[in-house]
View: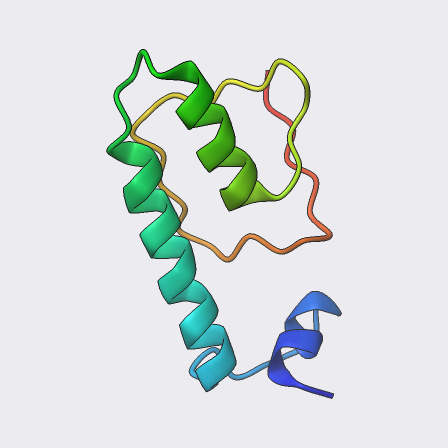
Length: 81
């Protein structure tokens, strides 16, 4: 089982694993891209947030700046109101 698979299974894992480090770098790059889109460019913001989160609701709005201090995993469901 890879460290990434362990993290998805909510088991103890090594956060310094190279695959996980690379995944975090990609996330940081996507966050930077999202936070630097003009606030009124709604189409670009929707495209970027979908790229970052994978799947979002139809009327999803994520205000900038958006920061993530934990790993966002594909099986997660994030609901805010």
